[in-house]
Length: 529
Image 1: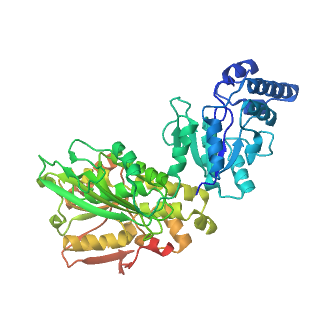
Image 2: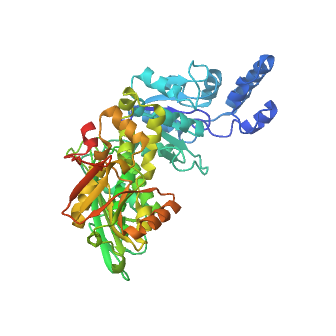
Image 3: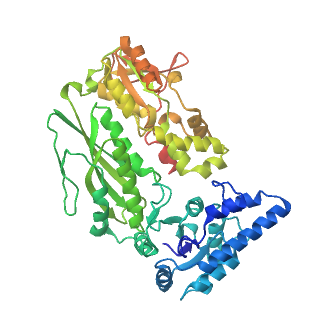
């Protein structure tokens, strides 16, 4: 629940244009790309004191000319009446703020619960210290604060603190996407933002919110019936293609970047059939206290991933329910492939080589680093390893290597390594092709970061969820050329065994001797949750 609004002052509560910083920088000798305050702090002796006095005079002169921004007084009055705590966070001096606000007809500093200027003993924006200080003064979580400003320093400070950020464009082009949570033209638009931050009632997503999101969804011309209010189905045109391939997967472990997981995990499954992922339906089950902003943020992430991979987001269902305690997203993805290009694992034969791309376990390593960073740090894992492991998230797609393998005539079977890790994935592959597998445990590549994390938490990397690596069966005479083709795409591939003329099962070797193959009744990641 949002409890406080923290406003920047110049250009936010006051009308933009009263401070001509480019001209002041020229008079001061400050480089155009360096902030004034930071430049002055680097000066020495009397030069520094003179520059500080010039800055004070510059701000006071601007304060004498300042006027309230459009809708500023109305929005402050309304927010106060609604019970929000209000504050000002500015790099200006206290004196300049006090003088400027005398030009407001209805407001004074007494209308604000907190006023933080550069005279307050906290680090200035873009440092988050002023926002964290506000949270302490008001005794509220920093996540319950909305930071409103017209400069990227405001947004940087807010995001670093963990607050919600709103950039007021004042009819300017605005910031690049991703630099803030919301962008508004005028302060009047802040009301709509705050409405999106109020928890939604249980039940289906309200139609007025759904209507705002639907026009922006990515889709191509094959979608004959696009998503819409009251439309429970979609229709697509697959003329010219012979086979429609479908898959469905829920996202239950992740709480971070779940939109990315929804698209890529399903796309990975489809790619193993040789199909191009085309059309996605999503079912979003959201816990109580979910806001419209939460829904929009998740849908934007899913939509962005769809656009990146050429997938049309065709529709689905969104509901707020006490049946879940964290978001549960179920993706259903469909794609097409020519019949002759359809991958069928039953084509695998004894003697085929078993290749593994990348190393294990991409997804599990990223998830643990993102969900349990403090636990890892407490277990002695370095911040550098945690940071690198978080970045593994960028590599959980196997679509590129699947396309390379499908284009290779010697490929006979593909299998995505997912829940249960490489140990379970190899058992599944063996069952699906109908033959046994001889696997060299020593040949299975494990990322050093994965091994370090697993050692610290007492986990077995062979049983850790491993999306991001692809198992490939291929004819023995073509294994080398396939590995070279993958290497040309910067994808590592390792031969870890071959297909046996035997009943399904794993014949494992370690240091040249037979050894037991581990079995995992649940993924190692599930033990952490």
